[in-house]
Length: 94
Image (cartoon, rainbow, N blue to C red; front, side, top):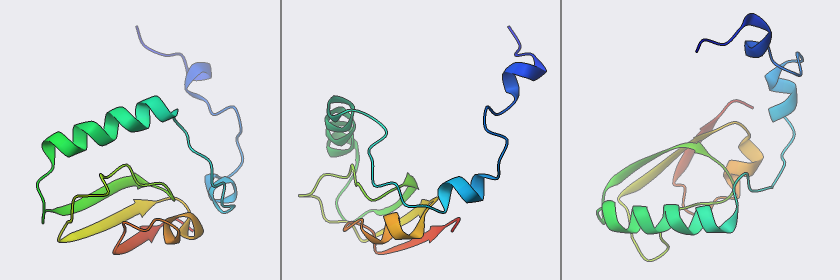
């Protein structure tokens, strides 16, 4: 079933840059999901890999005990990304 034009329209028509320009420092998923994702990464990611963390934030879901060659973050807010201790470098929209 395809969405109608009205269903595809943003509820807030203001610029995304305005919304993401303000750091939020919230988690967007619950602790159970974060734990499951961290467990999945623990099983699948190899130590010393180079990681591209898309949709990154101030919270990392990467297992703390795994050391990576490099972790590059991409997210929406620079202030939030700067607080993520796992990122070696990051790019942001703001």
